Length: 351
Image 1 (spheres, rainbow, N blue to C red):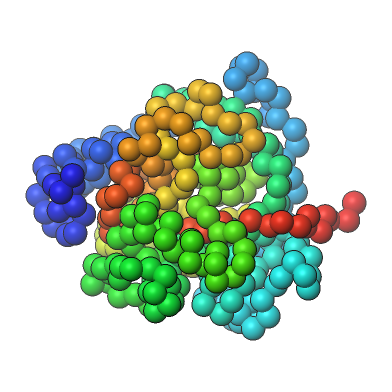
Image 2 (tube, rainbow, N blue to C red):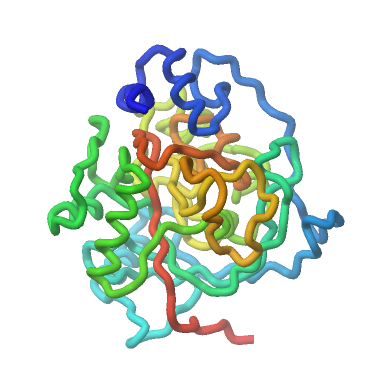
């Protein structure tokens, strides 16, 4: 597997090597490099309302969108919310959890957003076989998810405490405010073990179903914001942001929170960096759990990654898009986001 690591260390290696290496990730060649011609695929319409196929039973009404943090994390209101979360950690013993509430368990811990339980349609009955069949998933328990992708500063706290052994390369982009990259699946598990022991709470990677549910945030469109890529919605090659092709900044990761959050209050679920999830790779959704749990059967020589990244085109960041990566292979376009379990029932909105 050594040959897999080389193209993940520099962006200017020959296109041929990049294509051969990244084929292992399950990503299409036309989404990876400038040199390879790119064709816009036929738009695959998501399921809306009550699907008629046996694999996608009738969908109950989606949960109402909770109140969330301001759209721009650079705003003074968002900064105040961040500061409040830092100064006053929320615990199950002192306060109830409300959907959309931002908190953290310690000053160096990731900020978390409470995600309510709910039902959604996972996958898409379109051209991509690995997104089929679209099926209903019932997320029965609320959870808290990283408001942002895990940052270098949060990783460094683990290194300083001797909980994490490696200090990942930042690809010379800088570490301040940026998502940690060049971490393997096993590295992420090491971090999660450390922070779980530190806080006394269960931190883990989200399951693939939990990740897609949190990313969609009650939406059924191609991306959580709609069926068109638009402008400056995310950090990908054709997302028309400062970091995109033709933008004013170097093509690479962006500081977390540089784009508006989705309706659940989560930033950068589309693009910026791919994110590890728990599940082993399966070629399709056939036989997938319908309760949101991880799928630990299948080809565990690969783990599922979700969300797309700055290095790929926007189609790789679609809500239903799935890819795979060997758990021991790191990349400058791959990081992770934490999920923190909630043991106590959250406060329900007044009817």
